[in-house]
Length: 258
Ligand SMILES: C[S@@+](CC[C@H](N)C(=O)[O-])C[C@H]1O[C@@H](n2cnc3c(N)ncnc32)[C@H](O)[C@@H]1O
Image (cartoon, rainbow, N blue to C red):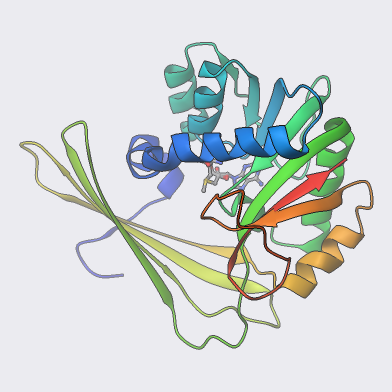
Protein backbone atom coordinates (compact mmCIF):
# COMPACT_ATOMS: atom_id res chain seq x y z
CA UNK A 1 0.00 0.00 0.00
CA UNK A 2 1.30 3.50 -0.83
CA UNK A 3 2.27 5.27 2.40
CA UNK A 4 -0.40 7.97 2.46
CA UNK A 5 -3.34 5.56 1.91
CA UNK A 6 -5.13 4.29 5.01
CA UNK A 7 -6.32 0.68 4.75
CA UNK A 8 -10.11 0.66 5.38
CA UNK A 9 -13.29 -1.24 4.55
CA UNK A 10 -15.07 0.78 1.84
CA UNK A 11 -18.44 -0.01 3.45
CA UNK A 12 -17.42 1.46 6.82
CA UNK A 13 -17.64 4.90 5.15
CA UNK A 14 -21.18 4.99 3.72
CA UNK A 15 -21.28 8.76 3.20
CA UNK A 16 -18.33 8.59 0.80
CA UNK A 17 -19.92 5.55 -0.87
CA UNK A 18 -23.10 7.55 -1.49
CA UNK A 19 -21.18 10.56 -2.83
CA UNK A 20 -19.68 8.26 -5.48
CA UNK A 21 -22.71 6.20 -6.43
CA UNK A 22 -25.66 8.59 -5.95
CA UNK A 23 -25.05 10.15 -9.36
CA UNK A 24 -26.28 7.05 -11.20
CA UNK A 25 -29.27 6.30 -8.94
CA UNK A 26 -32.06 7.92 -10.90
CA UNK A 27 -30.88 6.41 -14.22
CA UNK A 28 -30.74 2.95 -12.60
CA UNK A 29 -34.24 3.42 -11.15
CA UNK A 30 -35.57 4.49 -14.60
CA UNK A 31 -34.06 1.35 -16.12
CA UNK A 32 -35.56 -0.90 -13.43
CA UNK A 33 -38.98 0.65 -13.95
CA UNK A 34 -38.82 0.06 -17.70
CA UNK A 35 -37.82 -3.58 -17.07
CA UNK A 36 -40.80 -4.00 -14.71
CA UNK A 37 -43.10 -2.64 -17.44
CA UNK A 38 -41.58 -4.71 -20.23
CA UNK A 39 -41.18 -8.07 -18.44
CA UNK A 40 -42.83 -7.90 -15.04
CA UNK A 41 -46.12 -8.89 -13.49
CA UNK A 42 -49.16 -6.81 -14.44
CA UNK A 43 -48.39 -4.69 -11.36
CA UNK A 44 -44.95 -4.44 -9.76
CA UNK A 45 -45.30 -2.98 -6.29
CA UNK A 46 -43.22 -4.87 -3.73
CA UNK A 47 -39.44 -4.81 -4.27
CA UNK A 48 -36.44 -6.48 -2.68
CA UNK A 49 -32.80 -5.45 -3.04
CA UNK A 50 -30.33 -7.97 -1.58
CA UNK A 51 -27.00 -6.39 -0.52
CA UNK A 52 -28.70 -2.99 -0.78
CA UNK A 53 -25.88 -1.08 0.92
CA UNK A 54 -27.18 2.32 2.05
CA UNK A 55 -30.45 1.67 0.24
CA UNK A 56 -29.85 4.58 -2.17
CA UNK A 57 -31.85 2.84 -4.95
CA UNK A 58 -34.59 1.58 -2.64
CA UNK A 59 -35.09 5.11 -1.29
CA UNK A 60 -35.42 6.45 -4.84
CA UNK A 61 -37.91 3.70 -5.74
CA UNK A 62 -39.90 4.25 -2.52
CA UNK A 63 -40.22 7.92 -3.55
CA UNK A 64 -41.66 6.67 -6.83
CA UNK A 65 -44.39 4.74 -4.98
CA UNK A 66 -42.93 1.23 -4.54
CA UNK A 67 -42.91 -0.76 -1.30
CA UNK A 68 -39.16 -1.12 -0.90
CA UNK A 69 -37.32 -3.72 1.20
CA UNK A 70 -33.63 -4.47 1.35
CA UNK A 71 -30.96 -6.06 3.48
CA UNK A 72 -27.20 -5.96 3.77
CA UNK A 73 -24.32 -7.44 5.76
CA UNK A 74 -22.71 -4.10 6.64
CA UNK A 75 -24.04 -2.49 9.83
CA UNK A 76 -22.47 0.84 8.87
CA UNK A 77 -24.17 0.92 5.44
CA UNK A 78 -27.54 -0.05 6.98
CA UNK A 79 -27.32 2.54 9.76
CA UNK A 80 -26.56 5.28 7.26
CA UNK A 81 -29.40 4.01 5.02
CA UNK A 82 -31.89 4.05 7.89
CA UNK A 83 -31.03 7.70 8.60
CA UNK A 84 -31.58 8.58 4.94
CA UNK A 85 -34.69 6.43 4.47
CA UNK A 86 -36.64 7.92 7.41
CA UNK A 87 -38.80 4.82 7.74
CA UNK A 88 -39.83 4.48 4.07
CA UNK A 89 -37.62 1.40 3.50
CA UNK A 90 -37.02 -1.67 5.71
CA UNK A 91 -33.30 -2.42 6.04
CA UNK A 92 -32.49 -5.42 8.28
CA UNK A 93 -29.10 -7.12 8.67
CA UNK A 94 -29.22 -10.28 6.53
CA UNK A 95 -26.83 -12.11 4.26
CA UNK A 96 -27.39 -12.92 0.59
CA UNK A 97 -26.72 -16.63 1.10
CA UNK A 98 -29.07 -17.13 4.05
CA UNK A 99 -31.65 -14.32 4.07
CA UNK A 100 -35.27 -14.78 5.08
CA UNK A 101 -37.79 -12.06 4.38
CA UNK A 102 -41.51 -12.02 5.16
CA UNK A 103 -43.94 -12.27 2.22
CA UNK A 104 -43.29 -12.54 -1.51
CA UNK A 105 -41.99 -9.90 -3.90
CA UNK A 106 -42.96 -8.73 -7.38
CA UNK A 107 -39.33 -8.09 -8.26
CA UNK A 108 -35.83 -8.24 -6.81
CA UNK A 109 -32.68 -6.67 -8.23
CA UNK A 110 -28.93 -6.56 -7.65
CA UNK A 111 -27.18 -4.32 -10.12
CA UNK A 112 -23.52 -3.63 -9.52
CA UNK A 113 -21.71 -6.95 -9.04
CA UNK A 114 -22.69 -7.40 -5.36
CA UNK A 115 -23.54 -11.00 -6.35
CA UNK A 116 -19.82 -11.62 -6.92
CA UNK A 117 -19.18 -11.27 -3.17
CA UNK A 118 -20.59 -14.79 -2.91
CA UNK A 119 -17.26 -16.55 -3.16
CA UNK A 120 -18.32 -20.14 -3.93
CA UNK A 121 -20.73 -21.89 -6.26
CA UNK A 122 -22.74 -23.19 -3.31
CA UNK A 123 -23.17 -19.70 -1.79
CA UNK A 124 -24.17 -18.24 -5.17
CA UNK A 125 -26.61 -21.09 -5.72
CA UNK A 126 -28.09 -20.71 -2.22
CA UNK A 127 -28.67 -17.02 -2.96
CA UNK A 128 -30.40 -17.66 -6.29
CA UNK A 129 -32.59 -20.36 -4.75
CA UNK A 130 -33.63 -18.00 -1.97
CA UNK A 131 -34.40 -15.28 -4.49
CA UNK A 132 -36.51 -17.71 -6.57
CA UNK A 133 -38.39 -18.80 -3.44
CA UNK A 134 -39.29 -15.25 -2.41
CA UNK A 135 -40.64 -14.11 -5.80
CA UNK A 136 -44.30 -14.28 -6.78
CA UNK A 137 -45.07 -16.26 -9.97
CA UNK A 138 -43.96 -14.08 -12.88
CA UNK A 139 -41.78 -12.02 -10.54
CA UNK A 140 -38.39 -10.78 -11.78
CA UNK A 141 -34.80 -10.93 -10.59
CA UNK A 142 -32.63 -8.35 -12.36
CA UNK A 143 -28.99 -9.26 -11.92
CA UNK A 144 -26.13 -7.01 -13.06
CA UNK A 145 -22.47 -8.00 -12.90
CA UNK A 146 -19.14 -7.80 -14.69
CA UNK A 147 -18.11 -10.96 -16.51
CA UNK A 148 -14.42 -11.89 -16.59
CA UNK A 149 -12.20 -12.32 -19.60
CA UNK A 150 -9.76 -14.99 -18.42
CA UNK A 151 -7.37 -14.13 -21.26
CA UNK A 152 -6.93 -10.53 -20.13
CA UNK A 153 -3.40 -10.08 -18.79
CA UNK A 154 -3.54 -6.49 -17.57
CA UNK A 155 -5.55 -4.72 -14.83
CA UNK A 156 -8.61 -2.64 -15.73
CA UNK A 157 -8.81 0.84 -14.26
CA UNK A 158 -11.87 3.04 -13.70
CA UNK A 159 -11.81 6.61 -12.38
CA UNK A 160 -14.63 8.88 -11.18
CA UNK A 161 -14.46 12.40 -9.88
CA UNK A 162 -17.49 13.59 -7.91
CA UNK A 163 -18.24 16.95 -6.29
CA UNK A 164 -21.12 17.00 -3.79
CA UNK A 165 -22.13 18.71 -0.57
CA UNK A 166 -18.77 20.47 -0.21
CA UNK A 167 -16.87 17.23 -0.82
CA UNK A 168 -14.60 16.46 -3.72
CA UNK A 169 -14.01 12.71 -4.12
CA UNK A 170 -11.68 11.02 -6.58
CA UNK A 171 -12.35 7.30 -6.87
CA UNK A 172 -9.94 4.93 -8.62
CA UNK A 173 -10.84 1.27 -8.96
CA UNK A 174 -8.46 -1.34 -10.29
CA UNK A 175 -9.42 -4.93 -11.12
CA UNK A 176 -6.57 -7.39 -11.62
CA UNK A 177 -6.77 -10.23 -14.18
CA UNK A 178 -9.07 -13.05 -13.11
CA UNK A 179 -7.55 -16.27 -11.84
CA UNK A 180 -9.29 -18.94 -13.93
CA UNK A 181 -8.45 -21.79 -11.56
CA UNK A 182 -9.46 -20.09 -8.30
CA UNK A 183 -12.37 -18.23 -9.90
CA UNK A 184 -11.25 -15.04 -8.14
CA UNK A 185 -10.25 -11.50 -9.09
CA UNK A 186 -8.68 -8.90 -6.85
CA UNK A 187 -10.24 -5.43 -6.72
CA UNK A 188 -8.72 -2.34 -5.14
CA UNK A 189 -10.57 0.89 -4.52
CA UNK A 190 -8.75 4.11 -3.68
CA UNK A 191 -10.51 7.29 -2.58
CA UNK A 192 -9.07 10.76 -2.18
CA UNK A 193 -11.59 12.80 -0.19
CA UNK A 194 -11.30 16.54 0.15
CA UNK A 195 -13.74 18.35 2.44
CA UNK A 196 -13.75 22.15 2.76
CA UNK A 197 -11.21 23.41 5.28
CA UNK A 198 -9.83 19.92 6.09
CA UNK A 199 -6.77 18.16 4.80
CA UNK A 200 -7.41 15.40 2.25
CA UNK A 201 -8.08 11.81 3.37
CA UNK A 202 -6.77 8.82 1.45
CA UNK A 203 -8.66 5.53 1.80
CA UNK A 204 -7.77 2.20 0.24
CA UNK A 205 -9.85 -1.00 0.31
CA UNK A 206 -9.23 -4.35 -1.38
CA UNK A 207 -11.38 -7.42 -1.75
CA UNK A 208 -11.86 -10.51 -3.90
CA UNK A 209 -14.78 -11.26 -6.17
CA UNK A 210 -15.85 -14.63 -7.54
CA UNK A 211 -15.48 -14.60 -11.32
CA UNK A 212 -17.83 -15.70 -14.09
CA UNK A 213 -17.56 -15.90 -17.83
CA UNK A 214 -20.76 -16.38 -19.84
CA UNK A 215 -20.48 -20.18 -19.79
CA UNK A 216 -19.94 -20.31 -16.01
CA UNK A 217 -22.88 -18.00 -15.38
CA UNK A 218 -25.10 -20.03 -17.71
CA UNK A 219 -24.10 -23.23 -15.90
CA UNK A 220 -24.94 -21.75 -12.51
CA UNK A 221 -28.30 -20.48 -13.76
CA UNK A 222 -29.15 -23.93 -15.18
CA UNK A 223 -29.13 -25.20 -11.57
CA UNK A 224 -32.01 -22.85 -10.73
CA UNK A 225 -34.63 -23.79 -13.33
CA UNK A 226 -37.27 -21.74 -11.42
CA UNK A 227 -35.56 -18.61 -12.85
CA UNK A 228 -35.78 -18.37 -16.65
CA UNK A 229 -33.68 -15.83 -18.53
CA UNK A 230 -36.00 -13.57 -20.54
CA UNK A 231 -33.69 -10.67 -21.44
CA UNK A 232 -30.12 -9.38 -21.24
CA UNK A 233 -28.71 -5.83 -21.41
CA UNK A 234 -25.52 -4.00 -20.51
CA UNK A 235 -24.67 -1.23 -18.04
CA UNK A 236 -25.73 1.35 -20.65
CA UNK A 237 -29.24 0.59 -19.25
CA UNK A 238 -30.80 1.08 -22.68
CA UNK A 239 -33.85 -1.11 -23.27
CA UNK A 240 -33.41 -0.91 -27.05
CA UNK A 241 -29.94 -2.51 -26.74
CA UNK A 242 -30.77 -6.17 -26.15
CA UNK A 243 -27.74 -8.48 -25.92
CA UNK A 244 -27.01 -12.17 -25.46
CA UNK A 245 -25.46 -13.85 -22.44
CA UNK A 246 -22.08 -14.18 -24.12
CA UNK A 247 -18.55 -12.89 -23.64
CA UNK A 248 -18.77 -10.04 -26.17
CA UNK A 249 -18.83 -7.41 -23.41
CA UNK A 250 -17.85 -7.58 -19.75
CA UNK A 251 -20.91 -5.91 -18.20
CA UNK A 252 -24.24 -7.67 -18.28
CA UNK A 253 -27.69 -7.23 -16.75
CA UNK A 254 -29.86 -10.36 -16.85
CA UNK A 255 -33.62 -10.35 -16.54
CA UNK A 256 -34.69 -13.60 -14.87
CA UNK A 257 -38.34 -14.49 -14.43
CA UNK A 258 -39.87 -16.84 -11.82
C1 LIG B 1 -21.17 -2.43 -4.25
S1 LIG B 1 -22.14 -2.39 -2.79
C2 LIG B 1 -23.75 -2.28 -3.54
C3 LIG B 1 -24.76 -1.64 -2.64
C4 LIG B 1 -26.10 -1.34 -3.34
N1 LIG B 1 -26.65 -2.52 -3.95
C5 LIG B 1 -25.95 -0.24 -4.36
O1 LIG B 1 -26.29 -0.46 -5.54
O2 LIG B 1 -25.51 0.85 -3.98
C6 LIG B 1 -22.05 -4.07 -2.27
C7 LIG B 1 -22.79 -4.36 -0.97
O3 LIG B 1 -22.80 -5.78 -0.77
C8 LIG B 1 -22.79 -6.02 0.64
N2 LIG B 1 -22.46 -7.44 0.85
C9 LIG B 1 -21.30 -8.08 0.57
N3 LIG B 1 -21.42 -9.39 0.85
C10 LIG B 1 -22.68 -9.57 1.34
C11 LIG B 1 -23.41 -10.71 1.77
N4 LIG B 1 -22.86 -11.92 1.78
N5 LIG B 1 -24.69 -10.54 2.14
C12 LIG B 1 -25.26 -9.30 2.15
N6 LIG B 1 -24.62 -8.19 1.74
C13 LIG B 1 -23.35 -8.32 1.33
C14 LIG B 1 -21.81 -4.99 1.16
O4 LIG B 1 -21.95 -4.78 2.55
C15 LIG B 1 -22.17 -3.77 0.29
O5 LIG B 1 -23.09 -2.94 0.94
